[in-house]
Length: 112
Image (cartoon, rainbow, N blue to C red; front, side, top):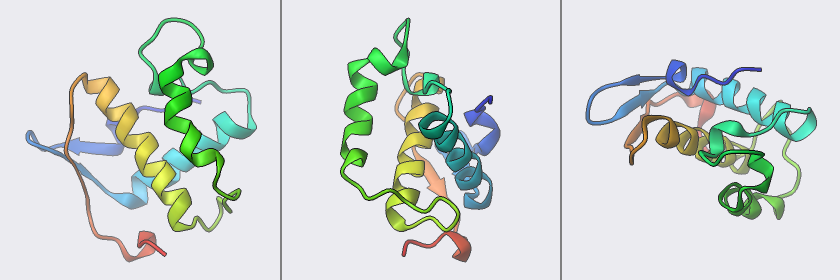
């Protein structure tokens, strides 16, 4: 599965505009492919080799190990927070600098 982070947002110059109805489903699909499939989280690491051996990736994922397994079909605030963090890290690594992200309002993706 390819995860093209730039296709999930619009570059507005000073920030990236994100529609949650686009970003969350694609990012959750990607997370499921990594966690439950044989995909590697290559978008989370710039280090050569296996991303699973990158201490930065492991440090990034560690806080989420303590969370109860989310229901990905109806994601909770914790699952949405993981998806948002995943997206923001992948985008920052892709553009090569710090980013500002504006997630547009969408009542389907409000924090529960």
